[in-house]
Length: 188
Image (cartoon, rainbow, N blue to C red):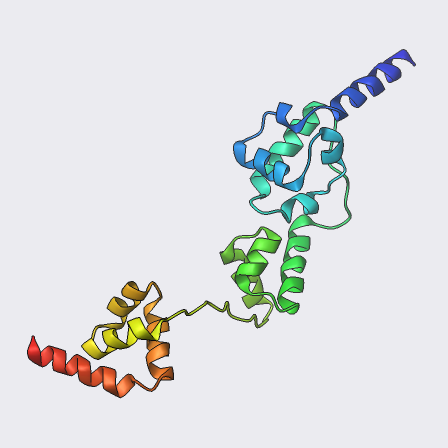
């Protein structure tokens, strides 16, 4: 009976330990800090899936934490589902709720590539990320009149060349821009 009491006292002491006292990589330690985990008791209340859905928290960090916990005779909370399947289901759920791929990546903590693979294999359609196209006409129009390339105009304005092309088409300046480019070639 005294050995049981000693073991329980040791377990209580371990549960009160700070996660900073664990021998973890910087990535795993920071991921735990972002989760708000302060001590081992809070850590043991989390499941593998809870951890894997956090940003920058992957299988390597999970293995590290499980290894450290096992040294103290502790483990993560048991779960009935496979963590990889759970992560995949979360990605599908986010996609069905209309999040963009980048938003899904941030919410699920998965890589962009993995999110794309899951979405493609599930035959889901996801809305495209909408970028702000802030093009100042008073700056853009003279550059278009000079017949500069889309890339040059984009660099000058701080937007992509695709955004410049969209702007030129949207404002009806395409023919004017092509004529200016041809005139520039003649003059050069």
